[in-house]
Image 1 (cartoon, rainbow, N blue to C red):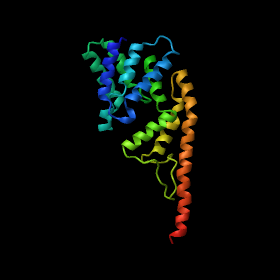
Image 2: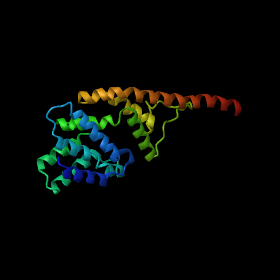
Image 3: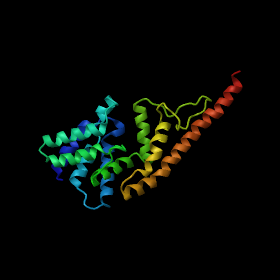
Image 4: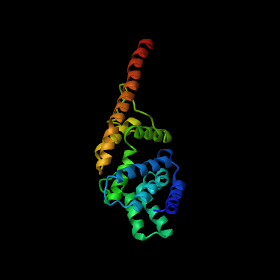
Length: 225
C-alpha cells in the first residue's frame, strides 16, 4: 500500500469517527495491534489488512443512532462502496468488506480469512486489560449508564444477574469472557498478559463500593430510627 492510498483511507475514516470510545486512537491501536500480530503469521495481505483496520468502525455512527443496526455490517457496506467508487478492484473491496463485517463477535458470522482473523483479534485486544476497562467506562459515561446496580438488600450487585445495563454487567457479560476468543497465538498471549489487570480492577472496584454501602448503611441505620 502506498502513502497516497493510506491517506485516502485514513481521511475517510477520520470523517466517520464521532464516538469517543471508538475514536481515531482506537482505530490506530487496532491497526498497530494487527501489524504486531501479522508479523507472526505467514502470507498476510497487508493491503487488505490495513484497509480493514482503518475502516472497521466507520459504521459506528449509524449504530449509535439506531441500536438495531450492526456497525460491522453497515461499515462493511460503506467501505465496499467507498473503495469501488474510488477505483479499487471489486474483489479487493469485497475482501475488505468481509473482514469488517466479521470483526464483531457473532457465532453465526465468524471471520474466515487470515486478515479477518487478525482484525478480529486486534480489535478484541483493545477491549482487554486496562485499556478495555477504560474504554468501557468512557462509553458508559457517554450513554449515561451507571457503574453498578443495587440489590433489593441495599448492597451492590456483582453484575452477574443484572438485567439493567451497568459497567459491572458489561464486565460480567463481555469483558470477563473475552480472553479465550482469539484466533491467533500472538493475540492469545497478549490477552493473557492483560487479563489479571482487568480482574484486579473489577475486584477492587467492587470491594470498595460494596464496602461503602455495607458499612455506611449500618451506620445510617444506627442514626435513623
